[in-house]
Image 1 (cartoon, rainbow, N blue to C red):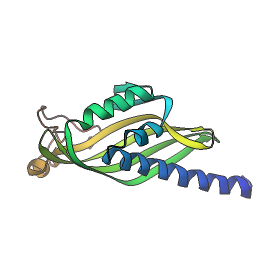
Image 2: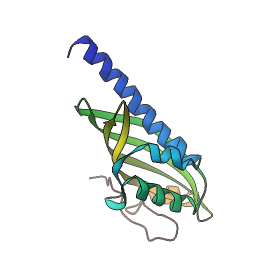
Image 3: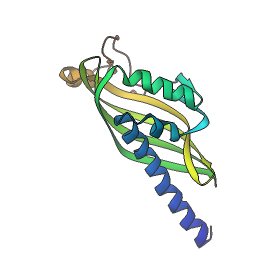
Length: 167
């Protein structure tokens, strides 16, 4: 890569980081237009490999319906490991912690978003996102859940294995 290409790659990494953070801030702030603008028209959103929305409008509808069951939320990204598949396509693994109120229960957890990004015009957008859960549990159960074989404990659901179990 020449110097200009290297500078462009650094700018793209910064733009992708801003996209990741912007999505979390939009979700936490109930900014559905901000959520909408984070995705391509043909994007998909999945949770643990299960499709939750295909297309920008379906993703926003899914996020809106999910948010209606939530109180205060904090999505905190810790890292974004990025790889470029060309000048207009990239992949990312985003590690984050979630603190949220779901159905009146405060929960805490850690997730990884497996992302694909496409450049649309001058801007980067999420083209696919799969939220993979490491652990999540009501605050009072976090220690027990984290130390168990079933660390995924969404309120009202049976405990389940992590999407990233220890081998």
